[in-house]
Length: 253
Image (tube, rainbow, N blue to C red; front, side, top):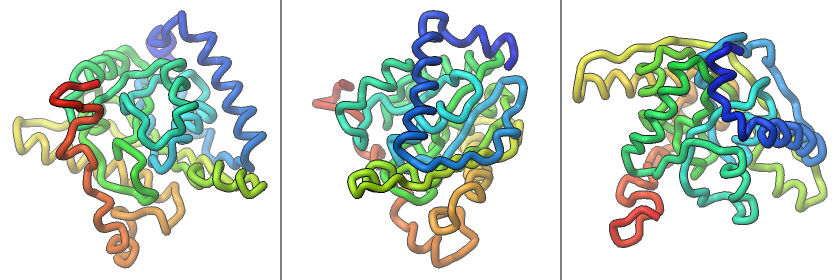
């Protein structure tokens, strides 16, 4: 990885992140039957945006498990679908928190600076794991790609949501981390609605690169099968369109 990417990692957090990556390797070996494909597709240098589907709270651990460096993450400030006992793990790793339903300018600026310095960022373009089919993205990943000129690396995550339900039945789930080929860079021009239209199309292109890396039945809005697309209708609704994440009486927690 480039010198800039190395410098982006907090010296204070490097030891704990290395330990957590080792723990992720041990954890997946113990709790699942893991298959990894496409590791040769990781580039040697940044800047790089790692993009993946997001069906489970386990997904960031899977990204940490497969990447050859301690990647930085941008993600939700709250974890509505993860067990409370695990909430400390993202904070222990350290990440750029986003309050869903807000502009989250500070997190985006920090992520942009990281990428402009040659760093590596992990982001789930869908912005949450409220469904188990591929959904239209939020604009954050496209915005960062356009602003920084970083290439993107798609990763498909399969059956992560089955790990713990399977363990309760005494079975280790078969899970798959499928690393695709880098694509991009992208650039959006103009202002206002025209720029947003371009960002939306970049976002759709990002999802179209993730779709072939996951099972056909879960490709949702990006499936070639109209029956699968029809079944995914409704999952595109953004849960935080009408309420900001963590908002209580007009204040963000």
